[in-house]
Amino acid sequence: MTTALIVGASQGIGLEFARQFLNRVDRVYATYRSPECDLFNLEHPNLERLSLDLTDETQIEKAIAQIKSETSELHYVINCVGVLHDGAMQPEKSLRHLNANQLLKYFQINSIAAALLAKHVQPLLKHRDRAILATISAKVGSIEDNQIGGWYGYRASKAALNMFMRTTAIEFKRTCPNAIVVTLHPGTTDTRLSKPFQRNVPPEKLFSVDRTVQQLIAVLDKLQASDSGEFFSWDGTKLPF
Image (cartoon, rainbow, N blue to C red; front, side):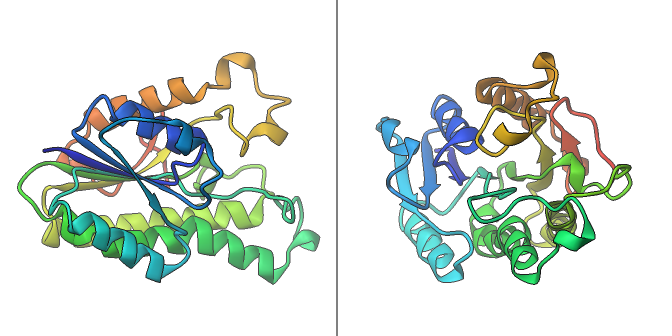
């Protein structure tokens, strides 16, 4: 039985991953923070919803324990959790906009949470079949690619995410040799996260969630063991760290 865990499936890219994986695997575990979310509009006999705030390690332990009670293996773990803005925070345009609390929130959600998830799913990826741990990152998290500055907290937290996952990939080569660990840049996708920043995006570069997930799944399907630890764009090209 093939299984997938989609983390952050309340809406947007995560919800679409859950929808598309229901046609690809035998069982999908999909997590949400609030029951008042779009995930509860998705009905399927092979879907199991799990309450999870990824910034709370106790909740991660509880969710993984529930999965372990039903299966000893996960074949896909897709982490779609991330924050760019909310009602109280916006990406910083300048150093004068920095404040410690906002920076901590970026790192807690975009970076640390992913590392804690990797810590707890590791036992479920120790099996003989091919397994994938993929985390949604962002091209703006590439240090080498940064030519225009701004968005300090988001950029830095995504760069930290990439380092966490690269380091995880190195450890997994010893402990979970059949697991491939990657970070993914989805492109600009028509979601709540990108909505305030779509004005200057050409229509052909603003992807629907359906197209984004199809493209990312195509990337995942082509991954080889040697790709573990790399950072991929939606079109399959490797991005610099």
